[in-house]
Image (cartoon, rainbow over all chains, first blue to last red; front, side, top):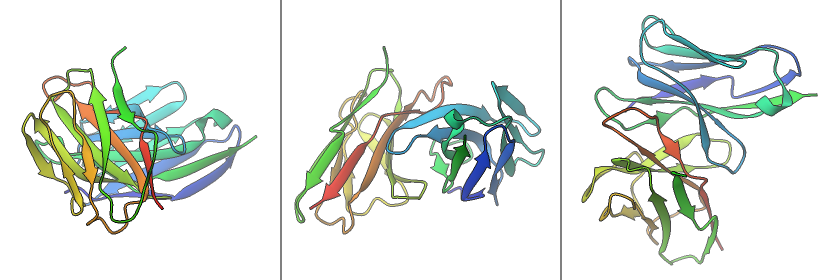
Length: 111
Length: 113
């Protein structure tokens, strides 16, 4: 199965600051997903990356997958309190829909 | 609107009892999943099913059982063999023929009392 390491474990930023969350795998990533979770709730899908070098953006959030397909980053520009929550990366193994997750990054945005 | 419904939202269980968590989807998704989340941790895969009447163990299947008699339903039973069942349980589904991403339910919080 895929083992994903996320960093940092937690992050506290001032509103308006940029931030980056990383997700690293020892194996090639096939289908890398980013989700956001509010405490005690389900997961909200943010983005999915499949190709090496791929980059996707939605509003102020940009996700990238490196060329080797072993590392992904999630970048938030001009953070807002609404960005606060737990960010999780997940990945499928090759040719299989069996998503495993990283441990998550807890983001706090101070007004 | 299509989605995944998990019930109940909160569940209390006495030690030694089996309890079943419900997960129903009306998205016509082929595959369904159960994850467990402990405080401050990510999600761990318990069981998944990619087709009716078939399912596979995930990484932490011991003490759990599932069934997939209908495409729409994937109930999870937490048995008395699960030594530390208190956790947040999330159900998910995906259309493996097309691509619409994994959709998650809102979760069930199970507490052993």
